[in-house]
Image (tube, rainbow, N blue to C red; front, top):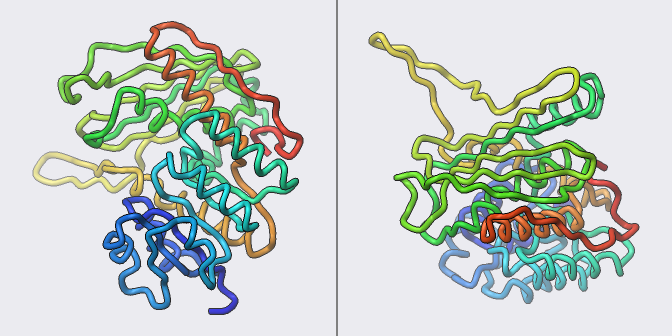
Length: 341
């Protein structure tokens, strides 16, 4: 086990527990060295059955534990900044789930801290970049065979939203994935946001503006629209269609088992993101472990995390005001290349 990358997993909720399982059962070249969560019983449950795993309640103190050589942050977004800065101080490589930091001011502090180091330490968990369908669409657009992209049409549906979900979270939690995917697919920054609000669905909790229709403008004139519907009631669906000057391409149409019986047919619809994007999460974490063991950092940067937070903030203001809101980004440090690199 001495050759394995010892990873401290911060956060033992739904996502963190799944990453503990992934590191133990799926990913090669790594082991879970520690699990930290303020709820010690939840941390113990996540680490149950794993030998030699330290359980801790302090996400910063655990970074100094023996055997910890890298950090996977899956705690709630507001806790990310402190954990990332602490990891940077210790020179520890980081894989941080989105949102990197929910507010753009805090996210920019993370960008500036890493830039001062003069080298990358963090990869941000925008796992759609590792999904096979998204990767094929990216390659197709980069190849230029369809001509200049004009529009992206996106759909993001969930069966139901958690009890704490707010109208703003449809944008800064759910649509944050579309924000990064659009920047990456088009290799363009998003420059303005407008949010339209249809009459809420009868299935939405009282007071929740669900669904929403979000329209993004880009720096080179493409448009990106997102239908986000987090209480659709029937399944988890993510789709994206690129419309270009010489053709179009669509991903996200379910290709699953169809069962026919008694004069009818039915097919399974994924019920959450851990099912739909299971392979993408596996590839993302494996790529992070492989790069870390080589002494490299690849994948989405902290600039990508900051840009997503800044665009989402503009989106929330657009939701609240009912108007078009421009996105304002700080100057990009030289350490970070364009979004597609």
